[in-house]
Amino acid sequence: MSSNTERIDVRLSGKQLLESATFNKGNAFTETERAILGLQGLLPPAVETIELQAQRALQQLGQKTTDLERYIYLIQLYDTNETLFFRVVMSDPARFLPIVYDPTVGEACLKFGHIYRHPRGMYITIKDKGRVREVLSNWPEKDVRVICVSTGGRILGLGDLGANGMGIPIGKLQLYTACAAVPPHGLLPLLLDCGTNNRELLNDPLYLGLRQARPTDEEMTQFVDEFVQAVQETFPNCCIHFEDWRGTDALRFLARYRDKVSCFNDDIQGTGSVTVTGLLNAVHIKGEKMKDQRVLFFGAGSAGIGNALMTAAAMKLEGISDDEARNRIWMYDINGLLENSRIDLIPEQKMFAHPHAPSRDLVAVINSVKPTVLIGVSTVGKTFTRPVVEAMSRLNERPIIFALSNPTEKAECTPEEAYTWSNGKAIYAAGVQFPPVHYNGKTLLPGQANNFYIYPAIGLAIYATNPKRVTDEMFIEAAKATADEVTDQEREQGLLFPVQSNILEAEVRTAQRIVTLTFERNLARVDRPKDITSWLRGMLYKPEYKECTL
Ligand code: NAI
Image 1: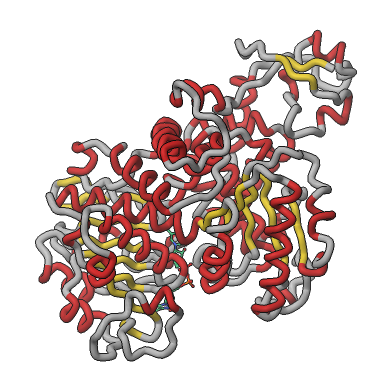
Image 2 (image 1 turned 135 degrees about the vertical axis):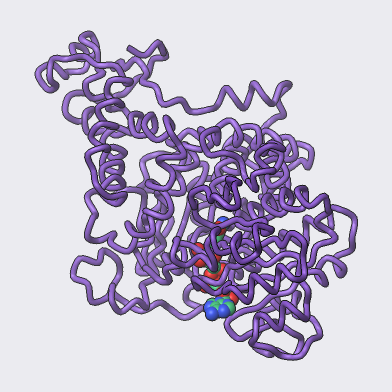
């Protein structure tokens, strides 16, 4: 039996208690609890520990043959016994993150209406315009600290998935808890359903969302404005985490609200931050500085722009000017190199469009711009071909090549390709986890530049400090702290990100640095404690049962 003797007044009994994912302990209810809480006769007689229950869950998971089946099993566990779900997931994050999050969550979103069992979080549709506050107030938990909200506009690299995108806010918030021990009860996954332009979904009888096309930008802005305002009024201590919106929406709404309310966009700022983590360690391996790199982004959507802005910010922190930093960053998109004669660019892209002849030839651009770093965020797999990697290798002793698009088949190149075509010289990272690669007698560890190293730590810092604003500086601090979690020996094997098996400790230490910065910048809306470490650690969620009373 768990040694935790903390008590909780559950205010529920009998079947209702067993149906509450928050309080249900299943067969771990003791004889005494069963007597007090009206559970006698409702459970098999054996009284079990959470360890034994976890063992059963692991055994049942072992019998599943695909990751999607494991995902469905785990979500069902989450819907019936949250504590046991987190116990299982937190027992082996390296094994379970790819199941509860990407790449499996991508497949789960594609099939969301088909594998659906139970509602989670909230759905607010554009038809609720004019009464969003009323709908929000239906959420039973009143102290909501973070809402993770998606429109399903651009799910991973899979495009517009409409209401199927709900799998993403659910998964993202599960990782707040699994990776940084953020207490789950103040976290609300939310799908802002504005319709979808995905014909296949609109024609699917099992699709669960609004069956209408997406609105105009103007209609959408009015709706999102109302939503953001309603959140301030309903949950005054809440930060809004924007996730997987269409690229242009992601950028314009972040710009619209970032200086007004507590919010961030993980696809822009989280992605930028984890890329900076990888870059800091990659330049460390080369014995160089960030400010001396020349970076070419292949893809100029929300992830590309977020990466470019955060990379520029990190370069500036090493003492170069805004202009110097921007001039070191180039971008390339579906229409070729971003250069100053292009008339199809949004302001965030124009910042990185420099004087150059138009070109739609990536190899020619590499030979002309001479990047030290090439970063793929294009959503298009296999675009870093052999000539591309060879061009980078001719220019650089150690070319830095990140292929960040996901899921797996969208990676611009695999680690094998990068290592083989560069004769083992590339410093490589991907957006998904690839297995170790054996090259020329050496074992190389391709790192996963996944935002899950960053946003749960940011989430914990937000949960703890309730900041007025969430700034880029917090994301840079997160990047530096995460980079510092990698040992010299790991860097020697090409690893640029912390090992996943120890992710919880790494993120809690990272959160501690973000919390300290938040207090230093006077952004916190709580009093500064004497000892930040013990204060923060005292808040951490533990997947243990409490003694239940009525
Ligand atoms: P997006 O759709 O906003 O942008 C895609 C960009 O790639 C656009 O600029 C587009 O013009 C460009 N592009 C498309 N086809 C191209 C081609 N054939 N050649 C050159 N450029 C091309 O998508 P977003 O949000 O920027 O995400 C991009 C990718 O990055 C996705 O696959 C996503 O999964 C991945 N991503 C990875 C993260 C990570 O590893 N940490 C985090 C966030 C996103």
